[in-house]
Length: 380
Ligand code: GMT
Image 1 (spheres, rainbow, N blue to C red):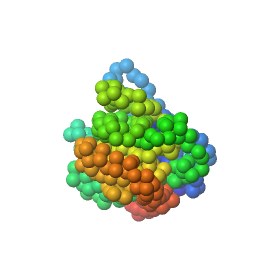
Image 2: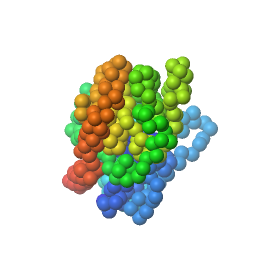
Image 3: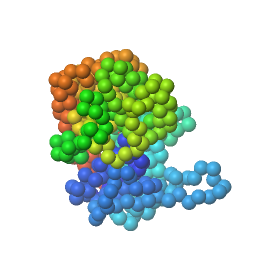
Image 4: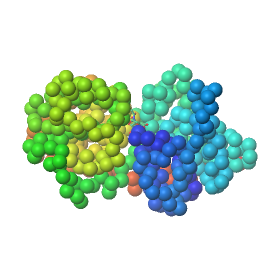
C-alpha cells in the first residue's frame, strides 16, 4: 500500500509512534510518505519505501500566525497526486485531522478519493483539543475521518465523554520493537559511568511539561535517596526543566541528579536504570513507561488515564493516585531495597512490555487501512 503519514516530528510520543509505525510498514514492503515540517527525529535513513516530504510555510509579514494547516493540506494534495497515495494516516487530531480533511475534499473535487485515518494520542483530546476555542473543529474533523483510532481504552472513553463523537473509535495500543531496547542483554551498559556500584539509578524521560508533574519526580527522588544511595537521570527538555533544577538545588540534591536534555539514545540510559518514574497528571498511554519496561525497568507511576493498561500494579511496578508523593516514594523504596524483589519486577516489566510487541500491533493498522480503502471504494 502507498501510505502518507502526517505527524509531529519532535520528541513527543505521538511523533515517535508514527515514525516507528512507518518504519515497520516500510520494512514490510509498504511505500511510506512522511509529510511534516521537519524530518522526524527517529527517521534516520530514507530508501525506496521511505520518503519524507517537508511542508514549507512561506513567511509573510502581514500574518501574525503563519498558516501551517493551509500549507500542509496543499502539500498533501500534491503528494497524493504525485505518488498515487492510497491512504492518509494522520497522528494527533490538531491540526492534522483538520488539514487532512481539507486535502481529502480538495482531491474529491478532482475525482480522487482517499480515505483518512485519524489516530488520537492524548493531549489532542484531553488538554488541547478540549479547549473551547478548538473543540468544534476537533469534533468535526474526528467525525469526518473515515476511521478513528485511539492508543488506549481510557483515551477512547475520554474522547466519547468530552466530544460529541458519532463514530466508532478503534483502540490500537502503542507498541515497542524489543530489539531496539535490549542493550542489557547484548552490550555492557557501562553503568559505572553513571553511578557507583552501591547506587541505584532512577530515570525519568519526558518533554518536561506541567502535565508530567516534574516537581513530584524530584520530591520522590529526594525521599528515595534519604534511604538508599541513588542517582536521578532526567532526560528531555521543556518548560519545567529550570524549575526542576532549582528544586534540586533547594533540596540539596543537585549533585545526585543528571540533566541530559533531549536524547536519541534513551536505550543506553534505560539500560542502566533500576526504576522509572512517571507520576503524570494524565497520560493517555505512557509510551515512555513502555520503553522503560521493555528495557526491564519497573515503573512507579500515577494511575491516571491509560497508565493502568500499561503498568500492572504490584507486578511491573506500582500505581498511585496523582500527587501522592508519599505512596510513590514508599513503593519505589520497597522495590529498591530488596534485590530479589527488584529482580522479579525487572523480569515482570520486560514480560508485560513484550505484550506490546510491534509485530502484533502493526497488522492492526494494516487491517484498518484495508478496511478504509474498501469503505472508500464502496462510496465511489
Ligand atoms: O505527553 C507527551 O509526552 C507527548 C504526547 C504526544 O502527543 O506526543 O504524548 C501523548 O501520546 C503518546 C503516544 O501515543 C502517549 O504515550 C502519551 O501518553 C500521550 N501524552 C499524554 O496523554 C499526556
